[in-house]
Image 1: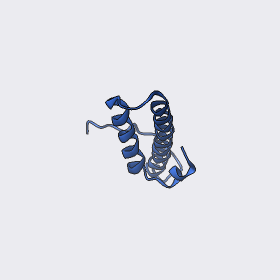
Image 2 (image 1 turned 120 degrees about the vertical axis):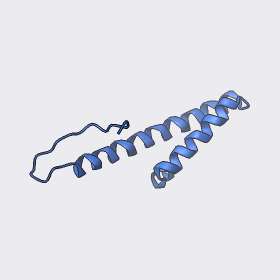
Image 3 (image 1 turned 90 degrees about the horizontal axis):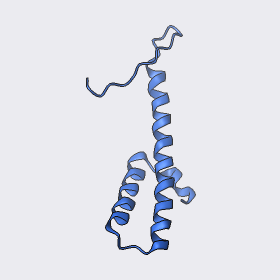
Image 4 (image 1 turned 30 degrees about the vertical axis):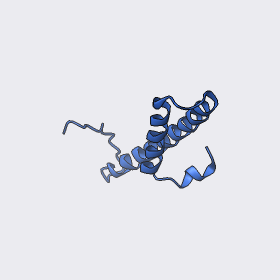
Length: 79
């Protein structure tokens, strides 16, 4: 994927990834086009994953209790 992906927001990158998945699932692409789109999808996946990891790090910093004691709290989606 070209370096321009660096300017994408997470939402934009995820949307592009979803579009690629839809194209691949449709099955109308040639083999070479499918491989090219798959490669772009892998790069977008890595980019989104990296953005999520960075966001997780920021959240952990926010959870610092202020006494220089860091308590790592698991995010619970059932709350």
